[in-house]
Amino acid sequence: MKEAILYEKLGGGKVRCGVCRRRCVIAPGGLGFCRTRRNESGRLYTLIYGLVAGLHADPVEKKPLYHFFPGSLCMSLGTLGCSFRCPGCQNWELSRAAPGGPGGGAEELSPEELVRLAARYKCRGVAWTYNEPSIWLEYTLDGAKLAKKKGLYTVYVTNGFMTPEALELMAPYLDAFRVDIKGFSEETYQRIAGVRALAGVLDSARLARCTHRMHVECVTNVTPTVNDDEDELKGMARWIRSELGPDTPWHVTAFSPHQELSDLPSTPVAELERVRQFGLDAGLRYVYIGNVPGHQAGNTWCHKCGALLIRREGYDTSLVGLKGAACARCAAPLAGRFA
Image (cartoon, rainbow, N blue to C red; front, side, top):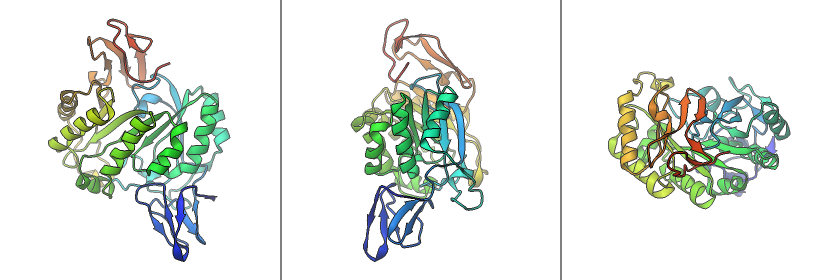
């Protein structure tokens, strides 16, 4: 165990965790909601420092990040637990597992060994993903510091529900913030995540982009009958445009039946195309359709002249129309970070 770096001591041996916006008050011997932080005699400890439950050299497009060093590999890793309880979670084996509990198998990996593995597998960066990385704060902070010293980029694939204090600690060492926006009302978030999280998620995305100057891309998994309300989706598109900027990529992805949502249908492609149009109509320049292999809206097109800039076939990425970070035909800049 390692003592947590963000918590407040309260009376009676209780502590208040400062990692996610639940701000759990934890009695002695108790665990926070994520089940990865325990109060031991009035001190809060993380139970998952260095515990890695998933580790892969992934294409960065898998995160998905489309305007961030396209075609590169990133060493991607996750641990156990989550600050949400999403009923259709694709990575439930990790997000719902507790350290030491059933299904909680994980192996230790030091930050130093993580950076060495990234170099060994020719990864351009490191991404904390698969489950919510902010609950792994102490480990991701140490790893990000080392990664930056070695010239690696760093990525959070996140639900966006960390506290401003946690985000501020990570910000100097974090390059990209790939954030889920699961709905656009507190009621929708309550259904999906088990907590009224919308205001906190939007605040984190705004802070990451506007205050900390990270590269931000947003994802919405369009789930039939759950978060597919037209007014909410249009409002979400307008919010991304006005608060994060028109160059912010928005990925609208197809839902696949899973876990407690196994009775729902997959998202029709026509519905994804309709939602994509909401984004374009709101003034977003880059709205992508995800989880539909071969769809033309998985490619990047110049917002000015319409030329094909980046072709994606599965996770094979070809920079076909770029000259530096601009369109080779009309010289319009492509927002993002590129080699």
